[in-house]
Image (tube, rainbow, N blue to C red; front, side, top):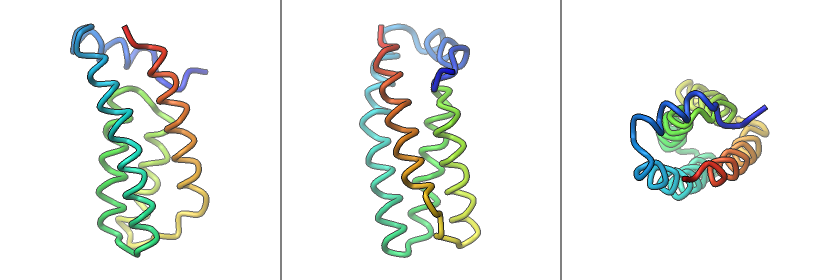
Length: 111
């Protein structure tokens, strides 16, 4: 099963054009690790708002590309933070793994 939804990615590629799709991939691959690091820092520092905000942004960006597994975990972390709960269990590790898989697949979808 692909980590990136083929139909969602095809729609994004059609909407943005082949020239822009690589720039969008670059932005995602560059920005997502910073968001994940900010989530981790927020978890370690007890900053619920930083966790919520970065998880929300990561979820939205993942959904744009059709990175469903990544979006699902980011949504869970966002919901926990919104409820004031920073006990995310292993979700940070799952989030990191989902990002790595999505980024690798996106690299293969470059035009």
